[in-house]
Image (cartoon, rainbow, N blue to C red; front, side, top):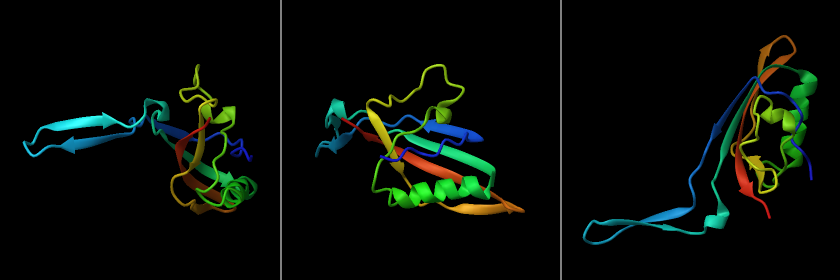
Length: 125
């Protein structure tokens, strides 16, 4: 299993997702929600922004994305992604990650590149 490149992001945004549920509205208009399975847990979203990456670092991201076949294969995150947290908010024991959107790498200067990586959690047993 490939681990995400150990690159410290310039910014990070974690969105705590909701538990898997369905909202049923009866003919009377009354709404009821049903939880599918509490064991599935939250669907977390993580946005990592990288600014002014070297070409070598940008290629690490590209090669990882390509190796995971886009969003097909899930992966672990290195601890540097969570730098600044006293306690990691998403357990590596229960969750892996996958790409939530295609990777785009934009030129941002001479031999410098920027990107935003959108990830989503995948429950891991």
